[in-house]
Amino acid sequence: MQNFFEPIKKRTKFNYKSGDKFGRLTYTGLTYTKIIYGHWVRIIEVVCDCGEVRELPFKRIASGETQSCGCLRKDVTSKRMKTHGLTNH
Image (cartoon, rainbow, N blue to C red; front, side):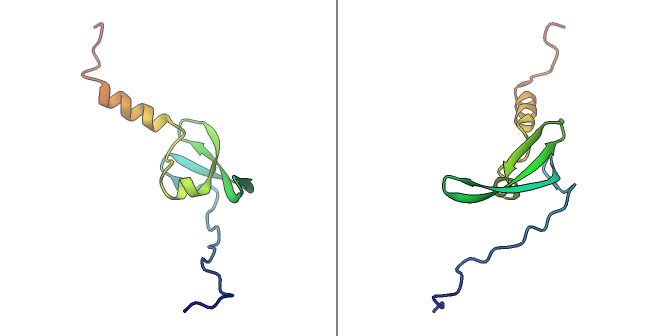
């Protein structure tokens, strides 16, 4: 049985450096926390490979939920919908 005073969930340290890559996103080194819907959330600044700068919750980036600024979805959809690329040729 767990002791009443023991924390149920241990917090892990933030062990990421500027320049770390998450999909198409590169961590710039800027980090802060803010309250969103009553919970403290770590926000980090990232730069996408296309040049877009975004501030996103770290949890979404570390879990793999967010891999780009939206350009990845555009590229994948474009490749999927393109038949041969010779329209009006």
